[in-house]
Length: 167
Image (tube, rainbow, N blue to C red; front, side):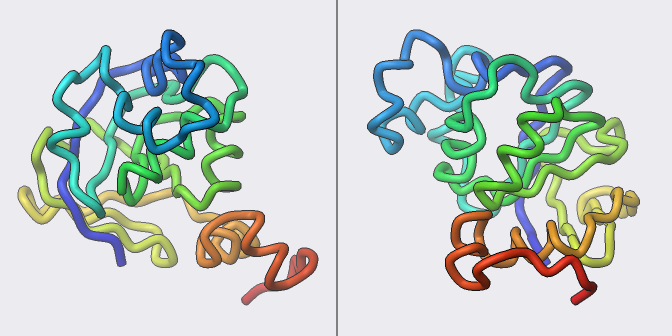
């Protein structure tokens, strides 16, 4: 179970919004790059986000380049998951690979600052502020196992390969 505060963003948050291109030179210094997470969209975000909090967005979250840095620095900032109406496919896959859940749901029923509780295995988000319960798309078991291990590399190191059987 994940629990934290919602930080609400709009539609079409790109990987350049997540990690601004002018900080590309920091790609080999990820802790420093993480200090600039969403800086152009929400300048105070990194000073307000706490471990376990959520990024909540509209449609097409993570559009843009295929750089995995965007997902990595979101996770490094302590964000437990991204909730969005939809996400760019490559961002979604990069996020799973680094152990960051991207959850697809109706984010219109979540406001900035709401307290949320997310059950990945059960496929639901409970808005503790409003009492609304939102269904999530279910992750395939193999993706849940990758997330449980903290990402694809830790999963492969531990298990050696994929078992596509249910857990």
